[in-house]
Length: 226
Image 1 (cartoon, helix red, strand yellow):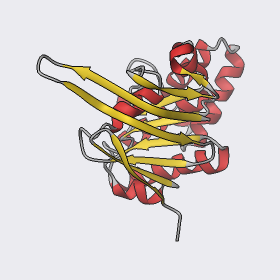
Image 2: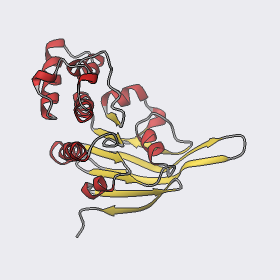
Image 3: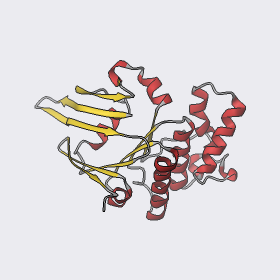
């Protein structure tokens, strides 16, 4: 579904050229939960941005269903196929939980009645109760806000879910709940879920762990292997 092919991403400052991602090749499949781990500065988040089409490679290619991100409408790619979940939730502060989830459906011009039903179903599926639908993000806990962010990602029916430190602002219990939701999305809804994390507890739950160092994948491990 999603492939990185000898991907390079370089940026220059006045003193040097830095390869934040340096020749990464990796395939990502539906129905699997991937964890990308490594120290700060190893290239994890940059790779995630390239997979999301937020940046384009300096060399090599990122392809989705055989089409390179350099040759596609990136706004359409993110609207229809890829959802990004951030550590900071990125919810619209003046929209309710329900309205936040409705937003990607409105972009797709789905009829209002259908959109509200879909949004409600997605919120309920991640454990947000109907009594919370009309609450603003500031009225929700961190774990609840992250659930709303996941529901918004699901509402757009994204085939690929990319999460950057999704449990970074959460306590241990809420973090476990979010990881359980992401695993379910991969294994029960056949989505490709890729998580960048410092949290080794998340890595232990992944089907495959990719360890990055100096812009390269140092090793790939099947986390479910005996």
